[in-house]
Image 1 (cartoon, rainbow, N blue to C red):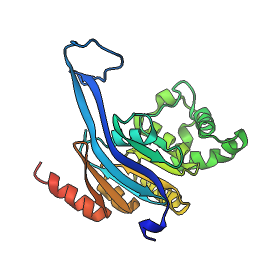
Image 2 (cartoon, rainbow, N blue to C red):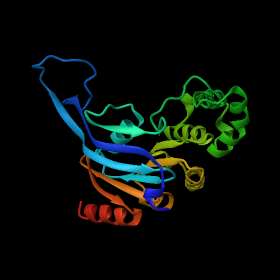
Image 3 (spheres, rainbow, N blue to C red):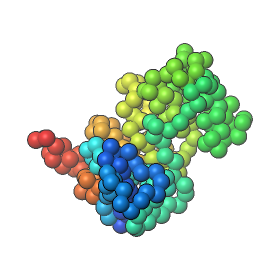
Amino acid sequence: MSSSERRPVVIVDDVHVRYKVYATGRRVGRRVGRFERGIKEVHALRGVSFTVYEGENIGVIGHNGSGKSTLLRTVAGFTPASEGAVYATSQPSLLGVGSALLPRLDGHKNINLGALALGMTPAEAEASYDYIAEFSGLKEHLSYPMRTYSSGMSARLKFSIAMAKAHQILLVDEALAVGDKAFRDRSEKRIRELREEAGTTFLVSHSMQSILDTCDRAIWIDHGELRLDGDPQTVVDAYEASTADL
């Protein structure tokens, strides 16, 4: 089906994102004086524009600090655009490895609370429990408090909770990099299922193989600019060629 026959679900229109940071790299969180020293402006996104259609799986690639995560946070509405605008047909759901679970509660309770936070009813949350536990591969750890989990285990549980619900627009930031091959295979299969259910996904990943296996379109962000947008193999080849001598 051509893009002209599909429904646009996300439009990113000439988006710029600027913010101020201290010299240490820590973001400025409140208003500071005009002559405050040690503060610089970061131009994280520079006039990025593209349209995403229903059912597409979009891979987002680029070097560290290129603006990939900023782009996802802007699409989700967490980071405001300094210029330009983002339009979406429904509220995008951002899944990042930094999203919070409650460290003093065990995995069982976090699964239930996470499912409720996704908008499930108590009955739906209970019905989803076995799926989430099985998907995560962490059944033997779910009776322990989250503070005992490694960062990778926590990220796997967050991703598994999110996968229990169909999303119209799902934004995934590096979650596929945290598990073993079996977990990555389950994750990639579930993302493909979401596409078949007319869901749209954005996947930020440093794994070019995950992009090639999972996505039908790729976007390369370079120093805050949209460098290339198109077929995943073409975009990945161009990106890898650019980094070959680095």
